[in-house]
Amino acid sequence: MSDSSPSLAFPRAARLLRPADFSALRGSSKRISLKHFQCEYRLNAGATARLGMAVSRRVSRLAVVRNRIRRQIRESFRLHRPGLPACDVLVIARSSTAQLDNIVLRAELEQLWRKLTARIADESARATEASPTPELLNAVEAPGTMRDRV
Image 1 (tube, rainbow, N blue to C red):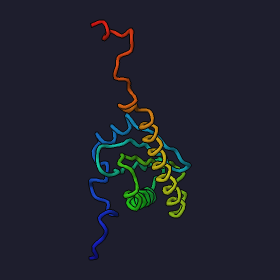
Image 2: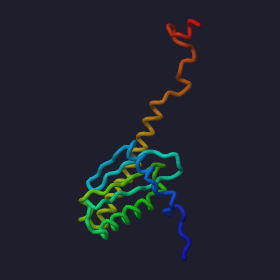
Image 3: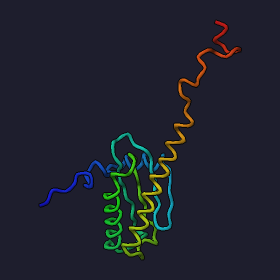
Image 4: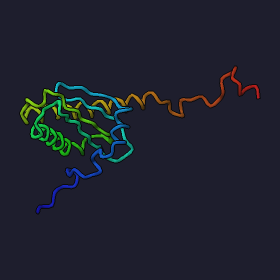
């Protein structure tokens, strides 16, 4: 067996496994919608991105079709995980994914990862702009505050 690159592996630490992980993500997440997939995400405290998938029977009654969609999501995530920010991601397949071939699924997932990376980068840039730096704050209290009466 050949020695594969550890950065392209899909270890247990890169998966959402517990129901508590899924419910925490569903409770406080942001959404990205594409034509065939919906994505819910939130930043995590870990060092890497983690993936959860939801491909329901509503997508297809055939388990073979649902498993093919899951394999495509998992493989695409495995290849893009090193470039993704540390976040929990839940990819939800829409019912239209059952009719698509693997090439179209992969292209849609590529678009999803690009959009996710850009959205998180924008949010973190906005957060750093919005947070005041200590040098900009006035160390002297403004007149009329409660502190100048003590």
